[in-house]
Amino acid sequence: MAKVKWLTGFAALGALAGIACGHFHTFWPDGPNCYGRPGEQITWQYFWGHPYELILFDARTPDFYVVPPEGEKETVAAEPVEMKDPETGEMRRAFKLTYTPEQIGDSWLVLEAPPYLIEEEGEAGQDYVKQCVHMMAEMGWDRRLGLPIELVPLTRPYGLEAGFAFTVRAYLDGEPLADAPVEVEKFNGFYVGEEDLPRDQFDMEDVPMITRVAKTDAFGYVTYTLDEPGWWMVSVSAESGAVTVGDGEYPRVLRGGLWVHVQGAFSAGQ
Image (cartoon, rainbow, N blue to C red; front, top):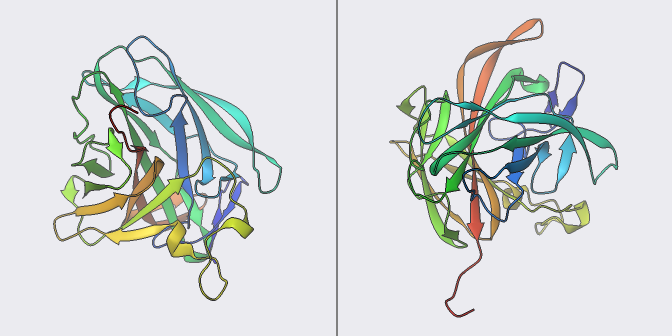
């Protein structure tokens, strides 16, 4: 199993189809979904780790900002905090984010993370993650932000019920990204210990049931069914050039992540 090594001394584990298995930048707002209202502050909690199991590792400082419906990107306040890792009981470095939107329409919270070394693979990973913030008017949920790697939703990324098919298109350097692995993982929001993980017929941890995998087609499209309520990470990866980490230069693997909220089924009269 490959090890992910923060050169600042922070360590994490894993390997995946392209990058650290199950490791994602996880942030979720203080409300029940991704909705906001102009003039009202939104607070997010952020950690680096395994969203499915709620396992935390120390996080370095990403670059956080919001792209509003109109105008230039805006700064998001990021306060270092400590969060307890339920698996080890140790306190981990995480962040609290705060932002007060002023415009109606769909804004995007964006995270750009510093590169990190996947030591045993001899590669470096670099992640770009975004989340839609819906404020009263459906404007801008399908736009491209121009990130180096990006998933652009073709299905509106809010107002989804469990079981809906969700379609995105992947881009690398502004061009459709074909035949690329796409990972899909649920953020449960509570600790899932080893004894409660899905297991296969050999009594081994059933990793494919935790981190699901699809691939983009020849035009960069992929469709996946998000079958439970809650927050879901959809992430595409691709090799792209090289990057310097510490004293060395390594092949770079980019990941473009999209957090999507799924609601429970609604029935009139309930």
